[in-house]
Amino acid sequence: MRSQQTHHGVAVVLFLTFFGTDVQAACNPPNPPSTYDFYPGTGYPSGSVATYPWQTPADTDFEAFETYANGSVIESSTNKALQSHLEVTSGTLTSKYVGAAAYRRAKTDDFNFRMLIQGLSSGKRVKWTDQAIEARFYVDAWHASDDTWQGVHLFGRYRTENDLYVASLRRDGSTYIKRKLCGTYTTIATGLLKDAGGATRPFNAHQWYTLTFSVVSNQLKFFVDDVEQLAATDGTFSWGTMGIRTDYANVYFDDIIISDQ
Image 1 (cartoon, rainbow, N blue to C red):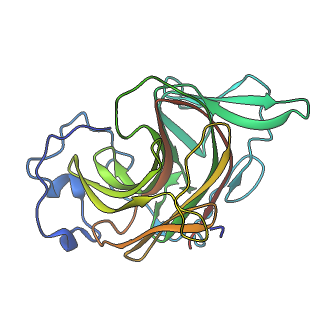
Image 2: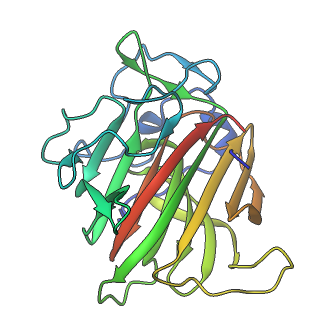
């Protein structure tokens, strides 16, 4: 298939009222003024990835990290002007040529790394509706941590750092789809990593895994290596962007694919 951990607010109960509205205004109490907002103000175009494709340096809707010099910084939270198709909000993404064949990858060694996909139309960020993000992950080393959310994650319909969906593969092999609304996480679905036959399998370092998070209409689905891990229904957010998050790991990335299914 081609497809932030603070708790300071109390979410309102009627989630369906958020379709097309400003989540910041709906939070009670409101998100703090310091909350990172990917869509400040108004006037953003909105539609599917098919309507508003993601333009990368070498392709459309695909980033394989082939165009960057070895060892160069691709994007960093301290310099967000390096790329127009990505925005790193925490940490640094670096180009790495790996092995004798010099395979071209991207890597982060930050304990908390956050990167958002930036779609643009006439210079304005796109509020994507139906969307799916796929990426390959390779954990090179785990950091020492007692945090249960240590692992790799994909964002869906991300609006602010406090308002988003996230699909997670944790170090212990557990899988999650969560909603973060007004800074409070709610688990929508959870399970254990499984293979195509339904048997549980470990999440190992030094092994590539392909993760896909699809958010189409109110249907949320999480895949690992093309095997559906979790599915859920939630209508809280109808638009936003996508992204990647890692916690307490040195991680290589490759082959980010954006689609609308």
